[in-house]
Length: 218
Image 1 (cartoon, rainbow, N blue to C red):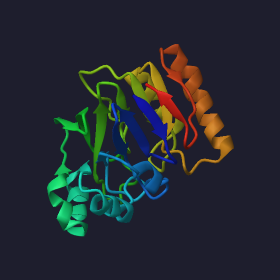
Image 2 (cartoon, one colour):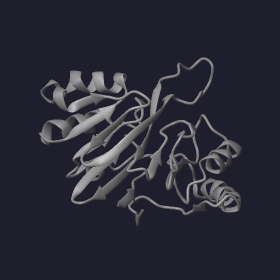
Image 3 (cartoon, helix red, strand yellow):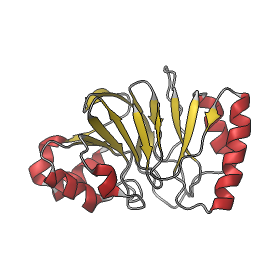
């Protein structure tokens, strides 16, 4: 399948004429990412992972578009786009379902802790076609499966470099690409990716940088 990275955590997957978009948030080029999409997966409710207005417009403008998300996100979007309520599906951890011809398995449950005073929200990680794993804002390692392509949250208010590296080592995917990097300047990105590349290689993971708009076959 073809994987295209957009700014921050948004990724677009294409195969057999179908398009699946993950986490079209307000740091990303949402209109471009969502153009012609058949389904959307949302990991959690934070605005950098779901641009509610843009996704609502897409649901109302495309009568075939389906959306899958944790209950809080799904409920909010049903309220914003009641005409599309039948195409908005709640996801919980441990489910297997199909979205636009892609086989999806859900993992996780909670967003990583930012600070004890900040409430923890639901977060779902998605494994697509037993290949691409998008963890959202968590370092939950999917159990019982072999991940081929890992999307790595390289920088966030809730993580540090050591945790990023440990996540890559734990999953041990053959390939890894960055997500969640909109808050980094080039110096910070280079520093983090250097550690991930060097240490990941020791454990069998080939890490490669992608800029927004870059596409790869996975």
